[in-house]
Structure formats: C-alpha cells, structure tokens
Amino acid sequence: MHCVIGSGPAGVACAQALLAQGADVLMLDAGIELEPPQAQTVRELAAKKISEWKPAQLAAVRGDIAATAKGIPLKTLFGSDFPYRETEEKIPWRGNGIGFRPSLALGGLSNVWGAAMLPYRDDDIQDWPIKVSDLAPHYRAVAGITGLAGQPDDLAESFPLYCDRPDPLQLSRQADRFLRRLERHREKLRARGWRFGRSRLAVRGAASPRGAGCVYCGQCMTGCVYGCIFNAADTVRELKRDARFRYQSDVIVTHLREDAGKVSIEGFHRQTGAPLAFEAPRVYLAAGVIPTAQILLRSQDAFDRPLTLRDSQYFLFPILRARGAGDVRREPLHTLSQAFVELNNRQVSRHTVHLQVYSYSDIIGHAIRGSLGPFKLFARPFAERLLIVQGYLHSDASSTIDMTLKRDGAKDVLQLDAKPNPQTVPTIRKVLKELSGRAIALGGIPLPPLLQIADPGRGYHTGGSLPMRKEPQPFESDVLGRPHGWKRLHLVDASVLPSVPATTITFSVMANAHRIGSRTADL
Image 1 (tube, one colour):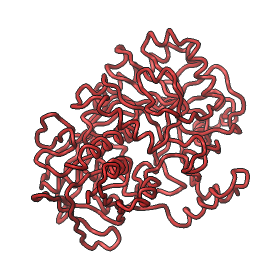
Image 2 (cartoon, rainbow, N blue to C red):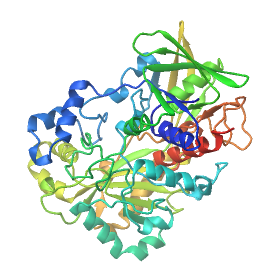
Image 3 (cartoon, rainbow, N blue to C red):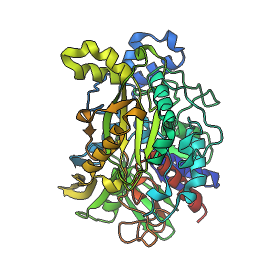
C-alpha cells in the first residue's frame, strides 16, 4: 500500500493518480477540522435557500471581518482559524519577516485559498527539467478533480483551459465594464504583451452530482456553505468511498527512513502524543513546504543546513475607474477574482506578471470605510468605482526565505528568515507605470500611494526548497520528486518546483503531483 502524507491539493491529486493506476493508498494526515458547532451551522445554512438564511446564523460563520487598506491579516473559514492551528506546537517553526503559515488541517490551505487556476508557460519554467507538455494531461486530470469555471478567450492563446466544458460564472457589473473597456483597446494592449479575460476558478459554476452551483451569495471570501469552491477535504471524503483508499487522521510525521524495499515512517498521535509507526513500499510527501522541509532535514540529521524557499511576490493596489457601476453593494455576485490580466512585456519583467482583479465585496467595503476615516460618507460612490488588484511576480524577481532546522534543547525548530530581492520593488513600480500609461484602456488609474507590498510568502505562492533537476545534487530532487540519495520517497508538493512563476501555483502543483503519482504507481 503506497502512503501519501498530507491531504492538501498535492496529496489528493497524487492519491487520485495512484488509485487510477490500480494502487492501494494510505493517506496519513493531522486532519484538524472545523469545530462541530460551526460545522452544524454551515450544514443548516446549506440546507436552505439564501433568502431563508437567518442573520444570526450568517454572522456566526462569517466571523469578524478585519480588512484594512493592507488587506486581510489572516483569512479564516467560516469564522474559524482552524486551518492554522497547532502548527507552532506540533511542527515547531518560527518566522522572521515572512507572511506565510503552514497548515495541519484536513484539506490543508485549500480551506482558505482564492481558487484561482492558471497553468504555467514554458517561457516561465525554462529552468525546470520538464516542460508544460509533460504537465498537460495532468492539468486536464486536475481540472476534472477541482472543476473549472471559465470560458475560452484571449487567455487561452497562452494559457489553455485544459477543460472541454468549463462552467462560466456570471461577471459583476464592475468586472463586465472593465473587460469590455479592455476589449475596445485589445489590439494596442496585445502589442504591449497584455492578455486578459475572465478569471479561471476552481468553482462549481453549475449544479452537478457533486452539489449545487454558485448562487452568487457574496460569501466566497468567508466560506461557501454549498461547497462550490474546491476544497481538498471534500476530495478526501470522496476518496473514502474507494475500497482501495484508507485515511488516517491525527498523525504527525517526524522521520522517514528508507530500507531495502520499503520506507519506514515515524511520528506521533496529534492528540495523545503516543508514538506511531508505519511502513510502505513508496511514500509521497505532500505535507506542505514547511513540514516537508522539517521531515526531510530531520530524517537526514541536517541541522543548520539552510534550504532556500522561493516565493512569487504578492502585492496589492486599487484601480479607481472614471465611472461607477451603480449600487454594487446589493448586486448578486461571487467575490473571488473576476478577471485576470497577464503582462508579458520585457520592459516590465523577463517573466509573466499575473494580476487578479476583484470587484466589490463586503470585505472591500469594510476596508474602504476604515480607510476613509471622517470621509466615510463618500464610501459608497468610491466603492462603485474601485477595483482591487492582486499582483504576483515570478520568483526570479521576488524575495526568498531561508529555512534552517535548528536544535532547540531536546527538540528542534524550523527557522524561516526572509531575504529581500533588490529587483522586487523596481519591478512592481514598472507594473504600475505600465498600467498608468494605459489609463484610457483601463478606464481609470491605479493608485500608487495605496500600493501594499506584502511580506515574502504572504501570497502563499511558495516552493522550490528541494528543486527538481535532471541531475540532482544533495537537497535537490529528480523529475519524480525523489530527493538525492532516496529511491522510494517522492516529494510531490510545491517543494520540488525549481522556480515559482507568477501565474497561480495550485493548479501546477496538483498537476505535477498527479504526474509523479501516475508514473510511479507500478515502479
């Protein structure tokens, strides 16, 4: 029985591939879940139409919206921070200048992600030992796991859909006007390397055997009670129906050891602390970049040996449009990204710059009111004209994070230290300059004074600490994710990405995990 460690997107994609090849799969996971009272309220809301929701129930699963002009400090699910709990205690780590946190939750960080799905381009992964063509069939398989909301448009020229029948989502009025405006200037923008279109989201846009489609209730950022947003936890529950799949929760893995013909797994029970041990002919480590680094470094007694974690720098700024779109506060809509803009302009960056455009949501409205202070009476007309843009850079132009396993008395701790990249700020300034120069096409202007450049890791597009190479050296891995010196251990999460392109990370991490699982099930 093959063993997958971790239940996040990479773990479920790998498990699906192994099962499809006829393998038996044991998934080991910490498996922290939403508190029962919150979960019960979610089930009660899901059993009703949105017109029947009671304000008190809705407030209970929304939690406090702490958005400011700097964004959301910590994104929660249904008002709970369970995706981040117990990590300092169970997988000791400490960070200096970073915005990233690991997860021990069932489903990992897919509990709180933004569901954006865009593949990579060969131009952005030239340092990889594989090409996009190697990932293509696995992108298609992953789209079948997650679902995909989108439609064919100019983006497909560089970023194929890998889905024959994507479910389009309804655009907000703001996003519709924004894209129509860009379309009127399409040829001039294309000449400058712009590609744009509707966002691609791992969202169930229409009803299916898996459940209801999006009802545009506007609660995406705090949690979808109907389960329309892909969450790897739901995939685990589906996998449990397969007789060849077994899931064991409350497992914290600490050490791996490879002997002839098998991998020994050591750890402890999350709740009781009792020691646990397992064996498997092959192990697939999908624990997330922080736990994966800890496990591998500890297993090799590699203390004080830093690994470099690469990041796709996250930044945030508003665009103020010349015209409003009516009272956006009462519009039925989804509140995930509405549109993507991809910049491939060498005057801006050597690699693709990815921009996700958001229209109004309650969270944005809250941030606007908090930012305007005594002028909050102007919040409504301001909200009607404001779009929020989340930007990402390629890791070559982004900061890095050193990860070092340190001894801490009888225990150990993973130390994470941010390392600034001098290219980051100039590149972001070039992005805003490019957009400002296209103000007529945008129908508005970006507001540089409100630019926020997040701490490294804050966008959760991080990886590359044990990168794949054709000829791996120590603390690198081969094209099947096997770390140097290992034969039966495969790393399948973002740890093996040689670099991190700006376009969304989860789709490609899942595709690579599916590729590795597909190629190793019968080795």
